[in-house]
Length: 452
Image (cartoon, rainbow, N blue to C red; front, side, top):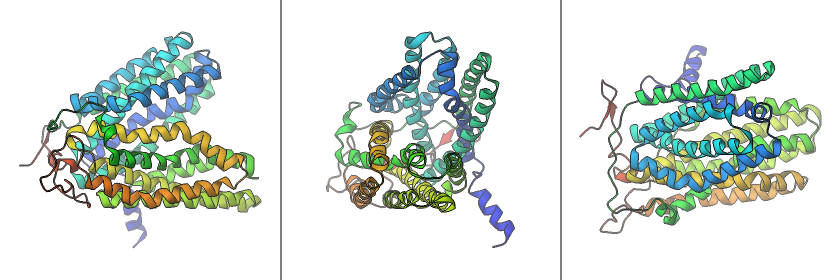
C-alpha cells in the first residue's frame, strides 16, 4: 500500500461517510466544543465568577451526581414514552437556558439548583442521544456510527479546551460570563442540528405494561450492565489514578501527564472507528468486552514498572502503559455500544440504555477512591489485585452476555418453545435486535422510512 493509499485509509477512519453518520458526528463535535469548554473552565468559573469555595463546588457536584444516579432509569423511560429525538432536543434547549442563567445563580443554593437540574437533563438527553442513533441506523451501521461520534467528540473537546485556555488567559468576569453564554449558544445550535435530523417512526409498544424501574429486575441484563460499568474504570485509571501515580511514585516530570492526555485524545480520534470492527453483534460485543478487560489487566501490570525505573525509561514505560489502556478504552467502548444496540428490546430501549449506564455511574462513584487506594497508596502491590479483578471480569464477560442474550427481555413475549428471541450472534430480526424498527434509509425530505 502506497503513502497516498495509507493517507486515504487513515482519513476514512476519521472522517465519517456522507449522510446520516456524518450528520450525527458533526452534531457531536459541535456539542463537544461547548461541553469541553465548560469542563475545562468550570472550576475557575465556579470559584471566581460565582464566588464559591472549592468545598461548596465539590459538594454541589457530588449531590448533582447522586440525583443523576437515582434518576437514570426513570429518565431513560422518558425516551420510550416521548421519543428520543424529542427528549434529546428539549434537553438541549433546557441546557441552553440553564447555561444562560448560570451567571445569575446567587450563592450555593442557586448554584446547586442549576447543577442538579443540569445533571437531570443531561442524564435524560444522554440516553435519548444514544437511543436515537441506535433506532435511526441499520444494525450493521450502529457501532461504527457511534465510533465516528466518539472520535468527533474528542475533536470537539480538544477545541473547547483550547478556547478555555484563551478565556483563562483573559481572566475577567466578563470573559467567564461570556464563556458560559457561549456554551449555552452552542447548546442551541446543537438543538437545531437535532431538529433537522431525520425523523424516525415510533417503536412498537411493549405487549405488557412495565414500570420504569422494571428493567432492574432483568437480572441477566443488569449483570452485563454492572460488568460493563466496571470496565469503564479505564477512564478513572487514565484521568485520576495514573496521574496520581506519576506524581507520587515515579521520577517523571509533571508535564508527562498532559502529554499522556493528549496522546489518548489523538489515539481515540485516529483509531476508534477501526477498533469498533466486529462489535456490532452480541457475540462480537461480548468478545470486545473481554478483550477490553484483559487489556486493562495488562495495563495494571505494566504501569507499576514505572515506579522502579529512572529517567527516559520511566517515560517510555508510562507511554506504553497509556497506549495499552487507550486501546482497552477503544475496544471496551465499542463492546458497550454493541451490547446496547443488540440486547435491549426496541420498545423499551430508553429504559434499558438508562439501566446500562447505571453500571458506569456506580463505577464513577466508587472507582476513584477504591482504585487510588489500591493502586497508589499501597505502593504498588495493589496493582496486582486490580489486575486480578479485571482478569476475572474478562473471564465472566462472554458467559454473562450469552446468558443475557438467551433470556427474553422483560415485556417481550416469550417464545412458545422457550428459546431466546435473539440468536447469540445478534444478527436476527426480532424486535429485541431492533431491526424491525430501524429505518433503512432517509427520504428526500429528511424523514426516516422503513422498508416493507
